[in-house]
Amino acid sequence: MVFVIAEPCIDVMDRACVDECPVDCIYEGGRSLYIHPDECIDCGACEPVCPVQAIFYNADLPAEWQEYEDDNARFFTQTLPGRDEPLGSPGGAAKLGPIGADTPLVAEFPPRE
Image (cartoon, rainbow, N blue to C red; front, side):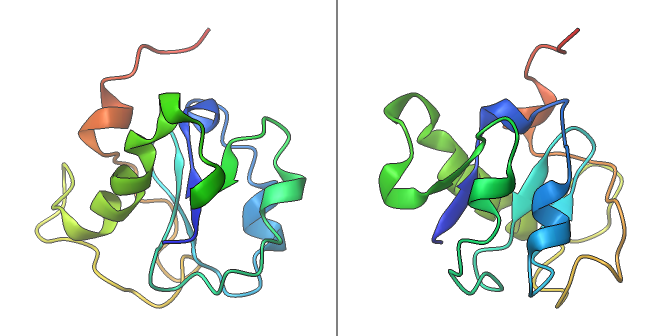
């Protein structure tokens, strides 16, 4: 994985990054957005448009948010609540639309006011 969406996105989900992504690899969960590690082409277009600075190149991910690197991948490899199987590599977020579920790390994060 090259780019990672971290904790500042939770309960914000501005979606400017989704609009900027040329390969449609940013998926919408219930409370956060997630970058698909196999679909991302490492262009970096998403990072500068994020208004809450939640997107990082994985080598630049702050230590306090390191767990979000694996968590972004888990969104696609684990079966999420309300789903019958993992998302896998669907080939684009637009055709799926909002997933409406999150990984346990995001789901258990205290709600923001």
